[in-house]
Image (cartoon, rainbow, N blue to C red; front, side):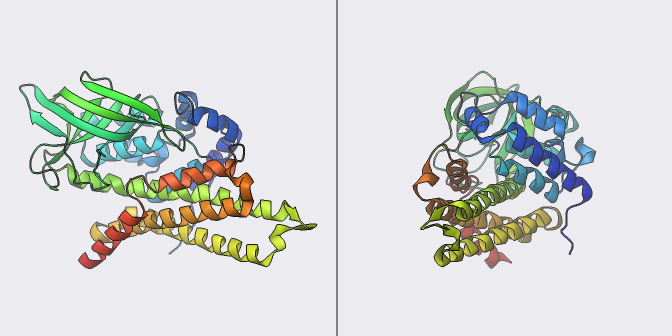
Length: 378
């Protein structure tokens, strides 16, 4: 099969890479990512103008892409610049709207694509340990719609999100697959308590507590009690996006390390001539190419595979991102020496992002176990 990018995707990649390199230099990026906002609303609007958000959705839904390779191109570019903008939330909420939304609900996609509405997924809960079906938050039917109660943890940009996609149990026990429903919730609705904080690698997240939040009947997304299937579907998009983002960050860390080995001298010669470091660098290059293959497989599977076959490929990609990401972070810093840990060197921030990427939507161990369990079902 030919996995070469189309001309449109190459143009999109070139445009985004150029924009990120010019507008998202590491010092400016750090000011934004570790600042009070956690990102730049102005730059987010510019990403929307460049088509970065629209590329995540098909033309039939107001975008101009939506294929797995379109998504991987966008997030690989974001990874190269350590971009801390809320595009992942836009992707997940948008794909959930496409999968299960009514026409009235899908109308929100226009604002998401335009960058005027920040959307995020509020699913993970304290102690949920990455399990999609572990939902303790509840939604009970009321006279006017639903009453939402519960807590959600590490909600990306949860403080300032205009639209929250919230999972809540409407039937069954805490760990049951059936009985989970999804709700579209105004980020400023009465009864939502928010505790925001800076993430270790940049950006913002929040702990959200819902206390008798009143929702209209049309807040329900999809069929009552059938939200798990939608969550599983959009989790697949998250795994692809994070794997592609990790690949972009790995490429930069790898190139920075190569350049350092070629210029840093000991005993009058470049340390890249030392055989031990050459072997370590060669191993690193091979592992990054393995990661590239995993992203290609995931981008293809998101469009052309279903069920267990799809989930296995996506789990493998996320496992590889965790394993190779940790290796790239550790080896790059070790080959730089002490300077590799300094705030002023961009590599330190790439290493942090690679390590923390592993813990979004399931870490390396989680997805290895998941891959083995799925293999037994095949």
